[in-house]
Image (cartoon, rainbow, N blue to C red; front, side):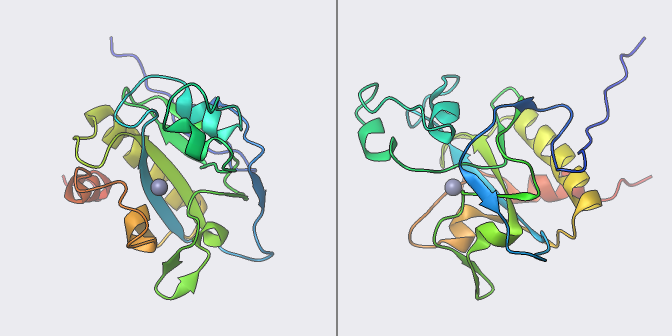
Length: 189
Ligand SMILES: [Zn+2]
């Protein structure tokens, strides 16, 4: 008998029932009355190109040891976060409730509207710009976006590079946008 997969759902504050919750202090309120209309897909690995460690959760909770890796000294003091992280095996971790503003986009603009953190949900994929993302990550990303679309008036899904060109490159050329679109397309019968 096939095990029934639990339905992914958000509570009224935008916390996902199936996510491992790791609260980040790096968030604040969205401007009053702002509709959440954008999903920003990111790629991150800490140390760069290495998977499975606790660097990302430490960075997003201000606990990254600047001496633990040469790369960390430059980023350890940054106050950053995202709403979600999807690890290589598809595990979903949540740092900030969707109704709050996470600090993932930085200086950014989409269709000449600035400060994308105000109106977006940030989803990090554990990965690197030029290494294929894992199937389990696409599956979870699509599940999550479907739920977000049911809850918020999401009308576009973009990459960090799209809203901060010249400054950011993630999720990089390795991210397969066509694959995500196929997963999100209404099911054919
Ligand atoms: Zn990013």
